[in-house]
Image (cartoon, rainbow, N blue to C red; front, side, top):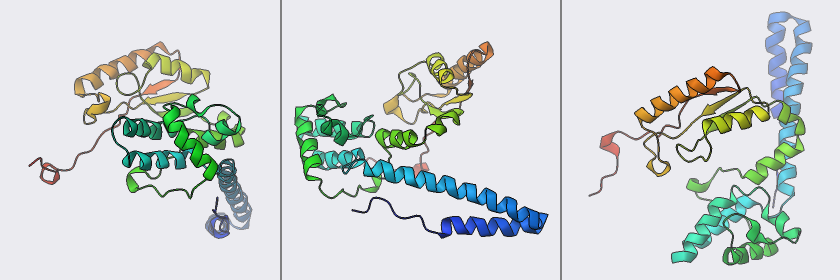
Length: 254
């Protein structure tokens, strides 16, 4: 199984050449030196990210992303309580803080992972031992990163922690989060954030208790009061808005 494709030479060579031409046209030969240095730094950042991704994938032959998909496929073949248990574990696998493979290799029980009981642990343990070919998820479940994977990339580059200045997607207890605005602002201040954005869902997503216009206005007043105290990061208020197709294109119930 190919873990990570090599870095194509043109991804670094093209910015170098294009930057040199553009800056030289405006600033002469001296600009070429600046262009090469800037493009070289950009290429180095790209290579570092690519390398970190390779390290993260090598760490586990069966990543949590694969386990999440295997659990989802097993749920499709099951019924009743077993199906619900497998689906819960599949969703939770994306947010496990550690790779399941690392948990098993350390001798700990897989049931320490969220939503994993003896029944689902049996499947996961077998997949970790046998390492079947990773399934290709359907479009609905494709493109998701796992929390464990994101942590491994950040751990490979501890210098990135000092660069982050904002978190622009945060949900409060008003919808599908679990903390108040004040609690989230205080936590953000402790890790050096200068601003945060509260992006609670709008009313179109009813399953998360999405906010209607009146609740959004009230939350805006609340956020203004928090900002007026000046005790933490600046709190912004965008929203996770669900867009619906025109009425003529929506599916009917007939």
